[in-house]
Length: 399
Image 1 (cartoon, rainbow, N blue to C red):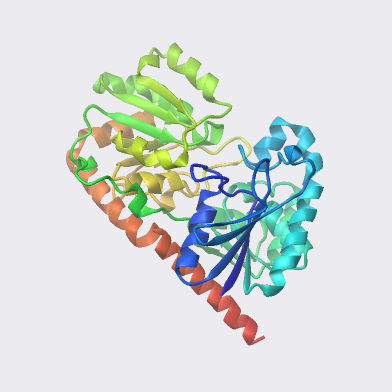
Image 2 (cartoon, rainbow, N blue to C red):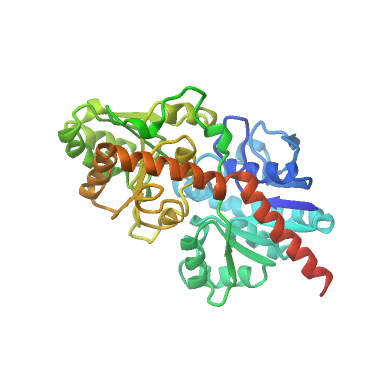
């Protein structure tokens, strides 16, 4: 099977976070015997084409000189445009370049998969391609408003299939495009890569002192403010408790000031951005993972939370908000604890309970590790995509 994937985000080097799940899925499909070509944006000092772990990567140029190719990567297209509005001028050139490369690659492809509704799904449709549109959550959030909603409906109505990364994302897509047939296949996790090294202490066997970690962009929807606000309560019960936040974003300065105001600055570490290949080691250094995501004023929330899958694979107990796609991963009191979002008391109560209850902690760690391997490992996820693609090809043969 010849598969073409188009994306606005893809790793630029081995330690890059950008679109790492796109590479992981493509790589696993290659391992299953398929040819996969990824069309991704070019950027400064990047090769025009290369082969990464058996995946053919074509990086399309959309602006000259290459120093102006600043629309993608970094914090993502939407954030890049918000920070530098002039980048919006590059969008037509980006779309045109993506359409050109798709028109060149699509005739030889059995399946074209477009990661994100905008701009990849849009580019495919404008290029006359009926793609499999893969929704990641943030793209559906962009379909607010009459014009964006109409455009989203046009894209989805012409898709060969629509796949969402979680039940919540699928529900939001159906709300935007009533009648759309949306399946759910989550993104996965490299279970072997995140498994604790041989001889590591079992995370369910003890959590004292509590070493809490959160990994992700420091943006409002992650809700880290409520985790920092919960630290005084947590430290009343466990004075040695500490928190490490891995990632950067517009909330960082405010969170740092908040930690000082609450008198917990010595217990909260802001690690900043780290290479993705260093995340397993950071997880091993901690014994509890927390994701206090919220629904923002504009309705944006966590699409799935793949970092939770990484934490589960690393055998960390997980506590997270009951919002968005998180319940697809965390089953309350089975694979972790869920708490009501936006309230530091509920965050603190969940953390204290996980730390205090050795039996509960051991059970959720064991079940989470089993479930991640059985339902969310990349071989399992790639097989689901393979079955979908083969079904679509067979359908085409009979029409």
